[in-house]
Length: 424
Picture (cartoon, rainbow, N blue to C red):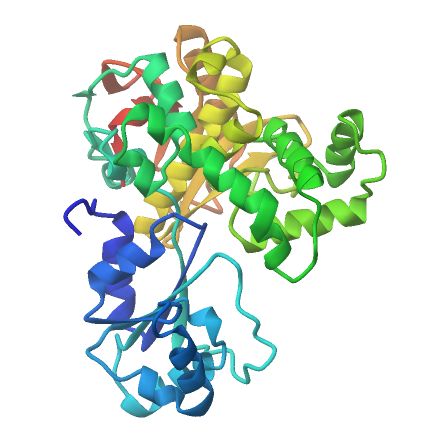
């Protein structure tokens, strides 16, 4: 554990265990679920430990309660190896009448719940974990926080300016915990390793349906090209057909995408539905994103130098990285991230909405005066459309950029914040 980097999720897990008997930690493969859970657990059962795997499966079938004995919180890793444990854990939580008893982690491939009799509601909480944000990986100074922006207490601050080349590397490296600890040339390979595992193995394990690796790769490349867009499956199919697979129908594409969602490879963004003064219809199609920008970069076969030579694609993948970080930071303060788009063609890249009704509007731009100005204009347009007699004023308006010497507030009230200065 000497190389362990503290995660924002650590405190969220501790808090959840204080009020629930058990917690199921879900998220993408290799995002650090087991390592983080180990950091909080008092005892651990590795279901798939080679020396004990057969014995563990036998006990899970014959005497599952024996596997649950140990100091709490007790981590049950790869619990999906024996789905019957779910009902036993629920039973134990009921009868121990204590919180913080168990942490469940496992592969991103879901467990077979066909023999499970109870949902676990009220006993087992589900929590989603993501890859590492720039703040967690040490690539953000954290000199300005979302908490301070929502509180109206943020001030202009200097930040460590990153070059566009450095940000391009962070996009392609991704937030994989192992990659964060490796030298750059090796770290860039982790996303390709992840992609190969998904394409060649995991997508056919997720629900027992055999899927073609080449088709999966074509689909993931198409999905990468539509990052940040509200794109129907029909359009994705058109792109796949244009790239060599005319027999890939919409029903099959939906099946593949659903499998990728089940494994937390993709995480689309829901639409925001505020009260508006105008009669513009709000578009409800979800915005398409991978859980980590490096997946898209790997699917397209791109490295940092390629992004520098294609600023349009760079901008799309930079947006995906910012969305990843905003989701992680929002989760830490009881918030969710949405996208806004209406029939007038007005779009806002991200809306951070907290449980208490506070919200902030965010436009994501690579940077430069022209793009920052365009982002600020969009934010003011949306602000004017919101009916503040029926809902709160936005807590802040922010243009999130790739680099800059300062995080600062413009005279018109819009914040300009480099992604490398942000934290929860």
